[in-house]
Image 1: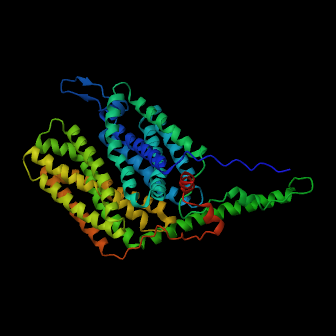
Image 2: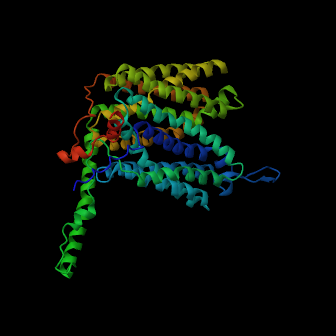
Length: 495
């Protein structure tokens, strides 16, 4: 008797464009959190007392926990510690655990830690939770860009990356507004709201069919590897000796697996450090982030002192958001028009950062506020145009299996050597010379260094390694199982 053929599977709801939208929303929420904790509504102010002995109660986190400015700054450093430590760990684990599942784990940690910030009761508790927020964000930062790069149309790869990184300035800006509004009622509510918004995305990372990165074979379960050594007797139960042997083998396999992960991590790091194109790209990125990090921290205060802006926070925030969105999208679009190659990316990076440095440097030379705003806006537009190209080089100058680690090392480097030390160094310079205009000019001059470093990349021999095999060759079956994430969806749509 003939049987009916099984019904054809329904087309998946998950398409490349929907993947991009979901990742953009998650990235936006990550940076909303960064903006919210820095807002006056959430961060607040410390208690102050006048000479007459009249004291005003503080507000927000700083006021409730009675934090000094140093302790307040530690909260930001704690977040960065969690982010920098966890980024290479998640990148390395992506070789043995499905990367999409790792994002689910990271977002779950992020959701828990963000909610925990709202329940914190003193300085140390909120510091620990902020560190865990950084740990949770690390998985997404390391793995999201490679997923987007895999699924973006060939002619629009940098435009898609540009849209993803556009969420950075816009997320921070939304966080300022969100924190200011919600903080008027209770600063804790701001963190609880973020956790509620992120929770559906954390769940999505576990319930949907796991996606696979290009260059990675599906991860084999350690449990399965261990259980294959067990044997059953006639009654279906393991003997005592066999159980002991299995436990011993399981322990040995676990130790060997952990040692293998560490060995592979250091081997991969060495490969990245020997890749001249990647190293030059990251060095330019460090110099770039050194300036941008200080702009975001000291910009309003410098603008207030140089041009006596009464609304420096709003003005600098508005310029940064508008120029950040337009510049980031434009950079990706222009590189796609030029044909997305590593050499063209370096040309765009050096040209845009050089022109941006000229406009930003010149803007601080003018005494007119309107001349400053016009020139500085053009400069920031050009400077933010580097976001798409710089991350394109990070992804395409290394083999597919190294992309998560390349993004993690890039993230760690630009923070450790870039924006983390730049703010206190700029403050030290200002304390010595006591002239914000000169301090701003000294800081901006480092953009010329970034342009010079990226210009060197134009002359390096570069090969786009996007389609190269990973360092750990895959079997024919593995390669068939790791069809680019959503390729089957495209085939179903065109069928």
